Length: 588
Image (cartoon, rainbow, N blue to C red):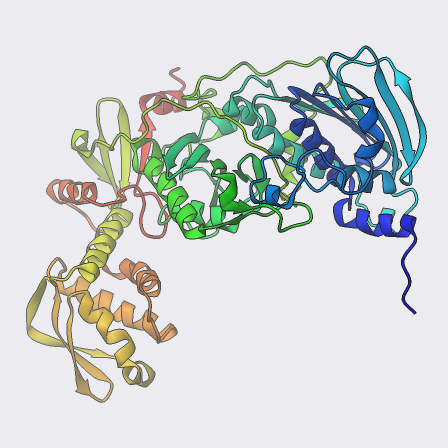
């Protein structure tokens, strides 16, 4: 028999879609504060938010006549008709947050709009109004939530420890704070100040306030615009990466989201700059027309869908790539991690920052708090303005200023200019040169080859010979001349013009060996990956180079599209400033 559920049962079921733990409540209440135009938001929690959450803001407040309506399901001031869903400009819009919160906890709200002499206080439990009356209070709204899931013990027992719930709230609120540099956001846990942002409009200062001064020393500013899209933010130097993506924060129109499009675009921008298993630090804020995205696809609004995801991905990846092409993308001794004893003093960020806000409350070590917590869910936020960094960071690296001074271990070329000292990995450098040449040959219509006086026999497996039609076009496209001789053997008659015979033969054998692992390379990306794996067999490493050969290697590296790293992501050279060296010798 079908029957309609009682209201209190239905409310608890609906609340479970929006509120699953304390961090969900904090997120929803802070979003409401930001939508209300607050310039300051303070979040106080106890026991990881399980027993107590209070969010105080100085926003527009709520009129006395609307206070009771605000707690009804699907009651909202942010949309009024279905067409409004096509262009969402606020963080909230469904009208479910307050109704869901009061269904599973004890809630008190105190609010006063600007210009009113008195405010309003209401108390609600299990969606029922317990008390309502006038009260004296400052402008804005304060909502206190107590005893989460007191009426749902089955849900309460699945909450994590107080420390874990606190970390989740800290991580979520820190992400939101970065999207609102103009809003002063303060988090207090158990009476201790966790972090406070200045609210003075500087995104880099907010990053430093939350994650520490060290992170600001290796961030590069990103600023790009095209086709009504604007990208701002910061990314890390390729020499400073992490083993996880926990320091990648993406924001679309101010809403912090989990976005495969932005993550893929970021990694595409770093292509050939990172070693396998390493990830860059990134704080990227994308603004696009509201009618080109859909945020109404996830109950917690964690995801966003783009009308043209490929256009967005190309825009972001190109912006990131442009930053890394400049001299500020060079891997330096500091960015790869110098010993603490010789650590350079805190670097001055290129963007002017406001001094961190001092608070009288005891400060919690947020880095330690977040280190054991791999960003669980990335929450939502709203449009923000980031101060544009006027620094020019696309200055090409001046290879012509380098003079070769020697080599160590027959592997690292030593060079210097007027202010810096460099160690160049001849193996990685030659690998980069070789890779770009073979890739260029593959893409070129004119194949520059040299014929061999005596053909070379190349043996392959029977499976590889049987699949010749799949891999032979790629081999010929790189400038090789190869023909079947019989009995799983081929005759190598031509090699690319820039190769020595030993290099050309070794590369071809390694390339075919890689083909055997994947005998159907039908797309360019597969071919490119195989070329990357095969380059190592044609690179000089550990060989003694003359000064002339070292200079020639540097001159060839200068002509590469990406001279800063090998195809596998390792740096081709490391920069030591004079200060780095003098610091190691304790001269400064």
